[in-house]
Image 1: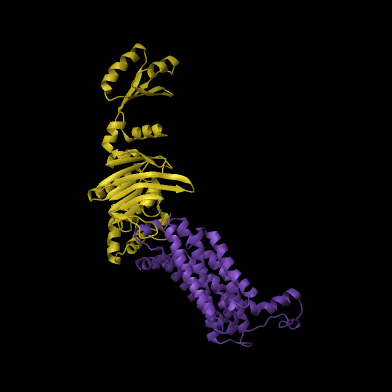
Image 2: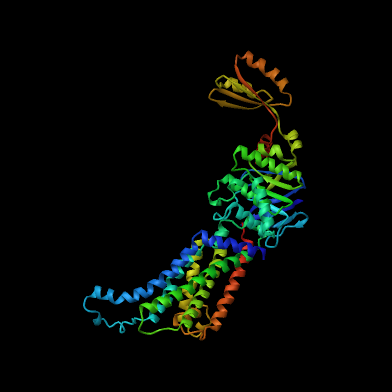
Length: 309
Length: 259
C-alpha cells in the first residue's frame, strides 16, 4: 500500500535521505523511529507528495507519488507533527471544509465530521473555535482531518507527542481499529513504549539510512537483551566497581545517591541471580532491590544508535 | 471547483471573524466622511491658525476650492494614498500566512487545489473592497453634496465609475498581495513589495507619460479625474490581465511550497 524504494533527498548539498526503502501493507502498522534529524519527517513529506525526492520511487495504493500534481490525494491521509488549522473556525467547520475540499456533499461531510469528532474524543468541543484548543486537542483534530476523506493509507508524524497517557491509550485504540479496517499506517514517534503495543513492523532510521528493519517480535528477540537491575546499598568504591564490571553479564554500573544500580543483561536471569548473589553476600554488599526487565524497543534503539553513530 | 467553493465559505468566515472587514470599512468609510468635513472646516482652521477674517485668505489662489467635486477628488486621492496602505497591511498575511503557518497541508492531502484557494481569497476580499469602495463613493457623493450645496458639482455616473476604478485597483492590489505572499511567505515583505508596486506604478506613470495609459495605474488616473472611461480601456484590460496572471502564479507557487 505504501512503498518507497531508494529514496534520496538533499537540501542545499546536505544529504538528508540516503536510499530509504520501506513498505507498509494494508492492515499493518509500521513504526518509523530514529533520533531527531534522522530524516523521518522528510520521508513522510515525500510520501505525502508535499516534497519531491531527488531519486527513488514512491507509491501509495499502487499510484506514483508526484509533488506539484495531484499527489496521493484521496488515498492517503497525513498528520504532521504540529498540525496547523484556521483558528477562527470551529472543529466542525474545519472538518467540513476538509470534507468539501475532498469532494463530499455538505450532508455527507457533516455526518462524517460528527463521526470522527466522536471517535477522536473532541465532539464536546466541536463548536468551539480552534484558537482555544490545547495541543492535545489539535492533534486529535489533526487525526480526524487526516481521516476525513476515508484514506486507505495513513502517515502519522508524532501523533501522540502532545497527548496525556489517557489520550495516548485512546490514540492506540483508534489506530488498532484502523488497522483492523485494513488501513496501512506509517507511524513515527519517539514514544517507543507506545510503538511496542501497536506496531507490526519497525524501521530505524539513522542519518538518512535505514539501519534496521523487520518484524517487531523478530527484532526484539534478536537485538534486545532482557535481564534485571540490582539496586545496591554500598558506596561506589574502586574495588567494587572493578568487581562488578568484571562480571560478563553486567552491562552497566551507575553510581547513584543511595548506592549503585547494576544493569544485568541475560537470557537466563535465574542463573545469573544464583551466580551474582553469593559474590555480593561474600563482599557484604546489601541488595535493596531487584527489578526484572523485559526486552524492549528502547534497548534495541539504544544499541542500534550507539552501534551506528 | 470543490476547493474553490469550500474555500469561498472559509474566506468569508475569515473576513468576518478576524474583523478584517471592519478594517476595510474604516479605511474606506473614514475618508468618505472625513474628507468633505475637512474641506468644509478648512477655512475655519486657516482663520484660527493665521488670524484675521476668512475673506483675507485667497483659497482659490492656494489651489483650494470649496465644492462637492473638490471633496470627492480629495477622497479619491486619500483612498489611493492612505487607504491602500491600511488595506494592504490588513491583507498582508492572506497567502503569506498560509505558507508560513503551513495551513494548507491538511486541505492539500484531502485534494485541495491551491489555485482554487487563491481565487476564493481574491473573490471574497476583492468583492468586499469593491463593494465598500462603491459605497464609500456613494456616501461621499451624497454627504459632500449636502455640505457643499454651491460650487462645482459632479454627476453621479462618473463618481460611481471612479468608485469602480478604485474597486478594480483594490482587486489588483489583492492579487499583488497574494502573489508576493505566496512568493515570500512573509507578511511584512509582502506589504513592502505590494506598496512598492502600487506607489511605484504611480511614479512610473508620471515618468513615462507615453505609456501611462497602458499601465494598471491608468485606472487610478481616470478615477481621480472623474472623467469617465477615456483612454483607460487598455489600462483596465492590462490590470485585469495582470490580476489573472498573478493569481495563477500564486496558485502555482503555493502548490510547490506547501511545506
